[in-house]
Image 1 (tube, rainbow, N blue to C red):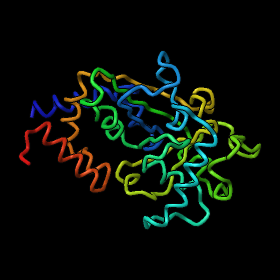
Image 2: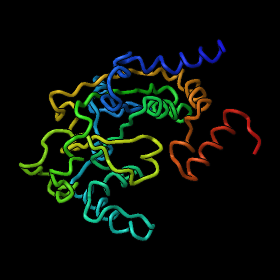
Image 3: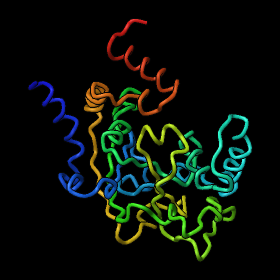
Length: 257
């Protein structure tokens, strides 16, 4: 039993970025994000986050073309979203790996920790980082039906945000259009300007905390999380996740082929 508590302490240590404030408030008041590396605007300020499409060679035309091609090919794979709802389509694209203006977050801090430590072997020497974000209202503007956001494109071809549209980053509690969103207890933050950092477009009342995770602790934390059921097969909820889990076990536990 003492060993178990020791392992739990190892898991909880990186999460002490706000201590008990995370459990004293209603679930969803704080949301979490884990990164195996520091993908930020300025490496000196790790609290500055930027979505995937804005990290490398961002161009408006490239983003638009990727989004439209994804939408065009969707029916051939048996996938569907609510008719005319480009927000749901954007969430689906994000969870399948397409670079978008969305940034993944989760209600579950242990899920965030998993993604902060999962690539211990592929990114040796790189510290992970876990974020906690307090957005205030549980339901953001983008998921409030009365704003009729389903009639507003999730992507603006000329990168100009309409005057009647949010000018700051917004929280998006998306419908579970992907099994991964359900498995990861996921939600998103949407960037009106994906080539700018979160700090440049964050609403005034939002609060962000973060904590680095030493690279030499990642492997041990990954093993701890797997022992508690936080693994690729659970969080990816598909055969790709099963394959990753089996491979990880083979490499780390000496499991026979």
